[in-house]
Length: 444
Image 1 (cartoon, rainbow, N blue to C red):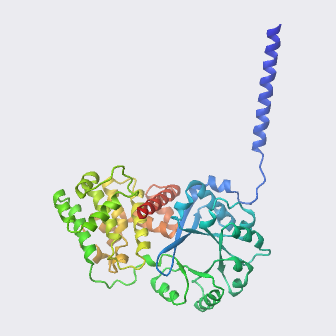
Image 2: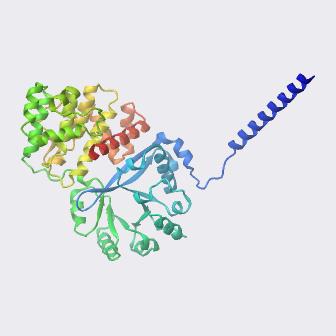
């Protein structure tokens, strides 16, 4: 009898637990109220369609002071500013914020309602500048902006017209951003007015060196765009002695000369040896035991890997003719590393050659001479030469995709990625990995 009672109690207890679990599941399946019409969760689940673009912002000394982070997508839902912000949040949940901005300030374009309603705690206050469009806002959330400003967030007002500079947000802003694609007369007028308010002025969409030189005369503080990587003046006829020496070493390594011959050639310049070993031992390579000599470096790395590090050393040379050398070096190292990562289907030897192709694709900008003349004295694989000079061949598709990634040209990225058998998510991840690698290389 007692056993029957116990059995009944167990059955009742199990039934109660099952009913409770069913109700809990039903409650979890109920749609929860959303603050925004484009939920962050949906964007995060759609991460394969997201693509991050980093637009560098340089100061008058041609140093990178920050990046505007833009998320592009094949999904319609993020075409609004709220959707774009949610996409940024989704991206940060996948990748480290400091790495996305290379430990510099991140400039994020947001709408007024995002500042009032969204949770922005994921964005570090001291590293974030919100770029705000204050036009077409019926009731601007100024008090919310003041609270954020007190927390350490900075603001940059997007100047669309003269009246923008009279908006109340200007009073607590550190920057204004003026688009150079409009009337140049307006640019002069708006810059003068902003200077009168003691605001730091950033001009956006600066893509040519001549454009930069024209704007610089106005007394602005920052320039957004890839103008520094576009070769404009290619009249230099002489390669500096340091670059020439690295080229000679590169050719020795590329031709697989005996280790003793290569080591002897390095002894001519102890600084060169030190710099190469510093790069090899940097976080960018990830080796555990320090490499202390050229011979051990050659034995450890092999000829192909040694050649790629000489390409890095060449790009970092003081002989380079570009005023924005640091920025160009970063673009070159990201492009080289990205090409290597995109070449999954290539052999390891070819991946090393892809890296060098990316690095040397900016040699005309670095040296101030035509690319044909710049690489004339280098022993490069045929596929690399075909990609760089003839714009064709197996390497050229990879180079084209890497350049499209810099410009975030989605219409080019998608077909090129498909041609290489890659998804947009894979390309995006490889681009961010390349960025992290280049950052660790510069950090030493």
